[in-house]
Length: 139
Length: 139
Image (cartoon, rainbow over all chains, first blue to last red; front, side, top):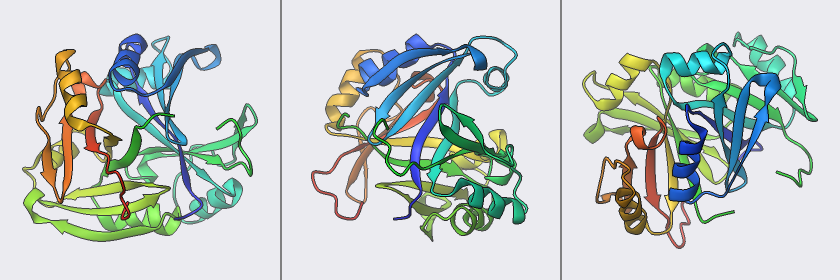
């Protein structure tokens, strides 16, 4: 065991209602309230998976990064988000080793610091890193 | 919370050594002993992720399903494996609802019952279902 944990696994979908029918009604996962995120032109829904989540993402326009991904590769697994204890230190370490970071310094969204690692550096996986919170009652 | 849990998340790679350098040495996950699985013509390595695992898969021939996937789509996220309490009941339920199963009856490997759901039924995700074990000391 390490201090690295799964936060969420994201799946890009072309039909959020159909995806919720499968993952929630048929498979049996809980959660799934649909949230619109106009700033990122996506609708999203989080399903509970133990202490982590599956995030369903449906683009609402054709020109976002995730919409282009969907158009090119079809629906499916999109990115993986892990929590690490010290995000700045980890990014500096990865950068010094020659790995390519999409965000060399962390961004912040709703109090959560995060950064993306380029898929070419993570074996084809779009990897998001969150900074762990010491106590995180809502997750 | 449900009784559905993540067992593993599989990543297909073209260079297992390079993948281990990233995920283990640089990112900091533990585990990663390389196992050859000649029956499936792959080398695999499991990294610990909380109670679950990341499975790295490198095909060792060019003609397996996973090798063709790698050739077509490149390295990256390959499949998701969730544990469900009653695998037969879940497969029957999904089948009755019109979802396409790759394995309509569970297969078994090393005492573990499993079945794959077709990506076309799971929103583009190749989904493996394991039957949960009542007590599972090694996982």
